[in-house]
Image 1: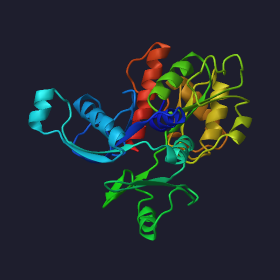
Image 2: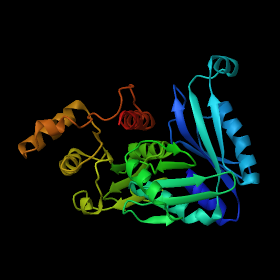
Image 3: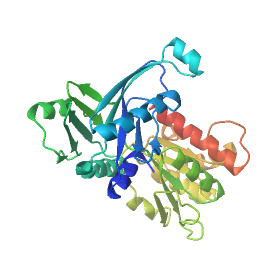
Image 4: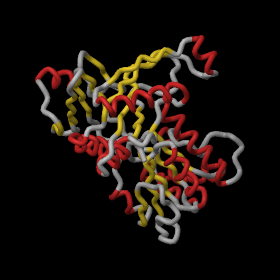
Length: 332
């Protein structure tokens, strides 16, 4: 369960909690600006802002915020002495904003969660003072849910649309809603099962696609966002490509691999990988070149797929594939 899902779950059950967000980072802190953690009123934690003593201290602050219903900003300085005393592997400084999760903004949290899942750009704007909090969600269409915005904040929001992390000002924070990357997994065999599990654990939104219902089903892929049973050619009418998508081609044979790759390479993506030996890759590439696919386009494909860690078992191969997905994601 991710942070916003946890917030909505707790509020829907009449529970409470607090949300912690890294709003500023300097140096080698373990998590980036925008990383979030939710602490429920029962002490449970969802998400992470880096673990260790930082998270422990924020947990205590979150319990206080729940009681006071007032925001709190923590400046955490991981200097040399602290790093040495605590045995930490990272230095750096972080500022962490802690706010109560408020039932009246459940629609804002729900909207942010839905936009995360679909990969559309949006902003959450939080205004705060000693005794008040106001929140707004600005969607990709410009519609505002939650509280109305002042003209000044609308101008600020417009200038922050393409920021990677939160922007903090005098009494306000503007946060981009960052989406979980989509992974289209073509093929539902044994390797795909493990890729789906590991990818979902590392915050990819997995869609599994195969033309065999006995393989592509919820029993085999319970963690996937969606499982589609369809022909590998016609399924592209149902898939959305914005240029942010990751594609792993793990079908049961050369013919299907070539068909999927031919369709995928026409579309904007962030990553394409195809399983198989170098010999098999050459056969598929030669076939596509004869059909008019350029060598330049094929150079962008990661084939054989995955990092070279001498993987042999389906589990090891899955780790190598997801490691490469993470590598590409972090570089992007």
